[in-house]
Amino acid sequence: MSTFKAPKGTYDLLPPESAKYLAVREAIAAPLRNSGYGYIETPGFENVELFARGVGESTDIVTKEMYVFETRGGDRLALRPETTASVLRAVLEANLHKAGNLPVKVWYSGSQYRYERPQKGRYRHFSQVGAEAIGAEDPALDAELIILADQSYRALGLRNFRILLNSLGDKECRPVYRAALQDFLHGLDLDEETLRRAEINPLRVLDDKRPEVQKQLTGAPLLGDYLCDACKAYHEEVRSLLLAQGVTFEDDPKLVRGLDYYTRTTFEFVHDGLGSQSAVGGGGRYDGLSEMIGGPSLPSVGWALGVDRTVLALQAEGIEPDIPSATSVFAVPLGEEARRILFAKVTELRKNGVAADFAYGGKGLKAAMKAANRSGARYALVLGERDLAEGVVQLKDMESGEQTAVGVNEIVAELESRLG
Ligand code: AMP
Image (cartoon, rainbow, N blue to C red; front, side, top):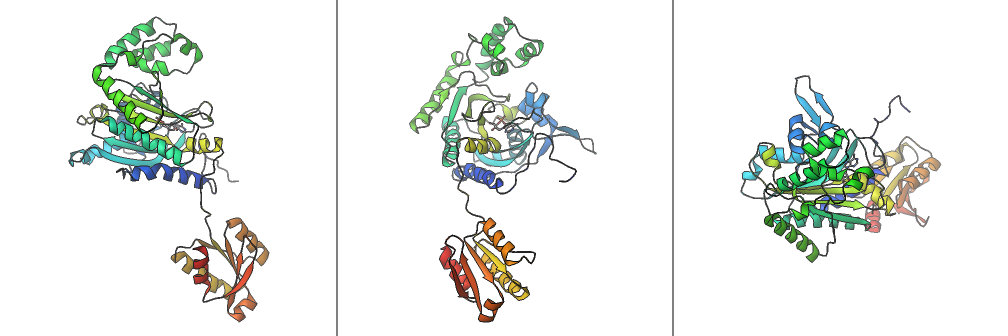
């Protein structure tokens, strides 16, 4: 062990486990690529103001969890705690929204940083795959995103998850509801900090996980009862589009989520095998975010799915994602000349698309065969002194144990035909 350890709240992805993370990212990305979403990549840090304005001054993410630092040049930056604000910033900066092709549909994959209290499923460095559809107000777009996330989880084999759905209203009806909720909250027995939160962002009090707070919240006014006709109609349309596609969801009138920019549709995917950190993904509509960061009006919708928690969900359901064996052929040379010949064969196999590896470090036969076993390769190639003299190589089927001598010049073709 070295003197150093991974920082608190972080962990390393190491083979073979790391292959699961790639499989999860790929399973989430595939339906998006298939639905008109283009890949976008933005920096891991941004001007701190982008998140303060975008995510919201009163959110835990901005007030407690951001990694903020000042550069040598005096810029105040933050490691990204989420990527939606960055994506919108990038789209506006490049004027993609003016190319006359709305919505701009993009997906991303990458690290996020939040200074949270670490526990299982909650880390300071984690990774998300996300999708954003920018510049269109259309219930079918909200439905599309929810359907695609559902499809990703199902493709991975997950079954024990639920979709929670709510509408947060818009700038017409939310303020009316907000005032009614504030009135209600003022009559409760709440601590200083919660009262302050009730002033700045009363909806987030509904999200308070403490039982003593939740108990007092029974009877709180519900946003659903305050939605204006336009929001109601919009939400009904999202619901019926989902139902028509056989996507089941639960209406959750208390779902508000931890970011301030949401309007209308909000949703969360929760997995029932994960304990307290049960949200595997979430998102919603953010019609006001563009204007909040100085852009034009661009109604948009998106989600982010947590890769770490999706891997935990797979474990909870006992699902091993389909990960093809990394190596098909493992070459074991015995001696200098054999090494040169087999190295050339391995290179040729790789060029032809066959996954091949090699016993490096001049290992003896026993250690090299152990390495071949560990690699998971279907075939081992062994080339010894006597084989060299005869112009053959021993081809060993690692499953049956059967061994055949094949001409050195024929071996690549033979392996290609056996591996199909
Ligand atoms: P959010 O950006 O807060 O809406 O979160 C979206 C998803 O990211 C969640 O449903 C989680 O799967 C994942 N996530 C959020 N915070 C963390 C964290 N601290 N550690 C691991 N995953 C997280």
